[in-house]
Image (tube, rainbow, N blue to C red; front, side, top):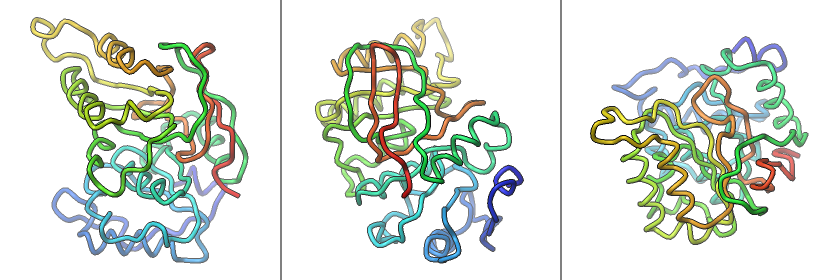
Length: 267
């Protein structure tokens, strides 16, 4: 919070430290906090305190198309909130939650400030996997969390999108399972490209039965799609989580290995 307070005035919600089982408060409390944060005219942006679990429980309770226009910042479990906003044509910021921000390098904070203040940030470097150059809205986030939206009305239109995926603590066979679920649902037949962030602590637990690295599995899965793909973007659960504007148009250059934003996240 101190990192944010260096630049902005903070207004923590009174329910910030609520707990209910494994959730940060009951569904009523968390829904109320989110609506309060958006509806308060004094708030210019809404920043999630952390990820965790349970954000999807709020989706049926909120009309995301009627929320005031202001950016939501967060990632991980909060990706379902981003997707609900994108399904209503909104732009939001996939970036560090409050509990992660203090450990990020200063340039990550500056990039977040740029997004919140209407500036288009610099391109992010990655590693070319499948060549090609495409443009489209950036959608997605945490692989497993995003896949839970299949079959719901909160999955945004993936046609022509650049799909951002990252993950933590999922072995290769489970990544393959969830990726295949997205493929079988037709997601990869609709998108224009793939932007892979960090896949941390995703190596096999027992290499006697699964000798292939997470990277090898991801390359094989991406190659099957046939769409341009870059990997190793500094986005995800690690020590560097570069903020990006979901729903905003990006250019994915899988020859040079660059993800370039083409429009601002805020007016």
